[in-house]
Length: 183
Image 1 (cartoon, rainbow, N blue to C red):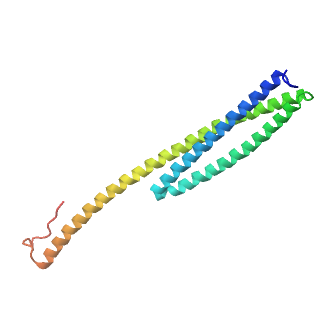
Image 2 (image 1 turned 180 degrees about the vertical axis):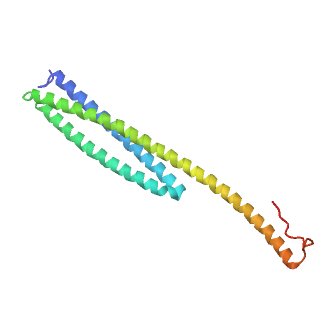
Image 3 (image 1 turned 45 degrees about the horizontal axis):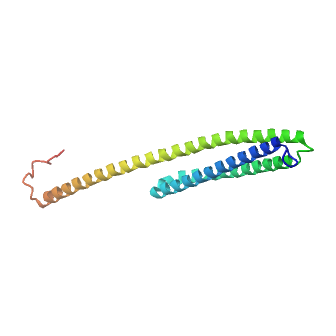
């Protein structure tokens, strides 16, 4: 025994605190990853104006996701507060500690499910980003092809304008033979 509490109680308290530290570390990593994703999406949005609507939708989803994270963090913090109070009253409320430990276990289990869902959502957002990049590349290729075609049409138009001017001036040696068709 250490003080008024048994070694098992201190072990349980240590386990709870270690779990809380791991959860806090995970939330920090998720926050950092979300922040990096936001910066990448802003860069893509600046590169092409057509991505702006999709970017706004993703930011809305991310905002909702962050709000849900905050709510779950508050719920988790409240659960941890209940567990701490139970540990301090262990001498009188041993049965209540066991019930709160089960509540903490359920909260960790729910958090693991939540983290799994968060990973899936992150992967889905990354797939959308990759798809948007492909769309941008495809649009750029189409733009280049259209610019090349426009240049060729302008060149042909200039040739036809010169031929038309020659025909009007009467300087065409083929006058009276009909139009000269070129492929």
